[in-house]
Image (tube, rainbow, N blue to C red; front, side):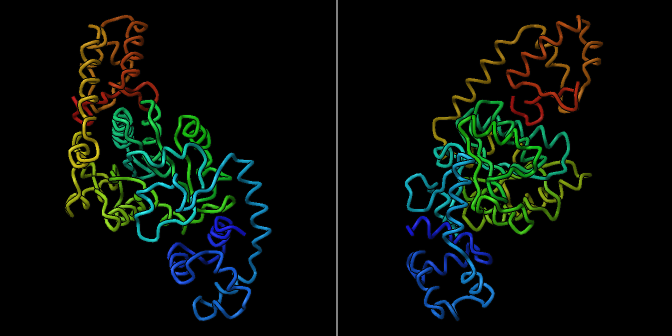
Length: 373
């Protein structure tokens, strides 16, 4: 059994988490030595809890590896260990870093300059717009967007990066043999096809148990220079990710929201505790300036070019919009143009990422949402 095989097996033994793995590897120096010790019966006794020791004894390395290698081939996935040059360097730095990382998609995406954008599953239209807008601007700068592929803010962040033609990385709380939530299966496929990656530290067939997601969250923050929380309740998985980010010495950002929304309680608490307030992409860029030197000009030039290229009809549509959704029929009544002509202008503005469609035929002004003009 190679060291790679031994690490994959160690990662799959029930009851062995990241902290236990780190302690065992420190004691035995390598994973192969751990499994050799198991054969001596009492070598691990006293080092591990009885139930975990029994898990080692019952674990079939040969059977697991045969099944796992078949699944990896079937899914077009691969495994990285920390000694691999492709293993993301930022992730290697964190406490209890994963020893094994399953990857479907581009390994290069994992080494990109990255920011994580996370938040509530049940969120507002405003939150979805902000997440997508921020992710799009990060992507335009060549900054990869990391998130957890969950419903709500995570999904909007991934989509925003993809719409801007950028790279995004989804970190799962389950194995790569399935996508959770299932409705995001097509999104995961699009991420992989767009030079991004879907990753997990869990063996291929691991189910999405609740206890897996805090472990997943430390990888979301660990891959990133900073974590942006868009919306979060007072008790939220997003705040667990923030805790990991702070432990890892990474930047924490929070987007302010309505004082009347429960999903603003968490972000406002973070702001009170010293998180950087995000009212626009510039707030993120300013904090991460040492890592993004020379890229801000490209974004500003791009915005200026888009503004200058607008036609009179496009400007008319843009001037009717704000961060409050406006229905298409209202635009027709305001602008007094043929509906078909207005729809052409809307399509061009959407392509230029200056406006966004929300809830069917409602539209908002993307730049106005985040004061990015």
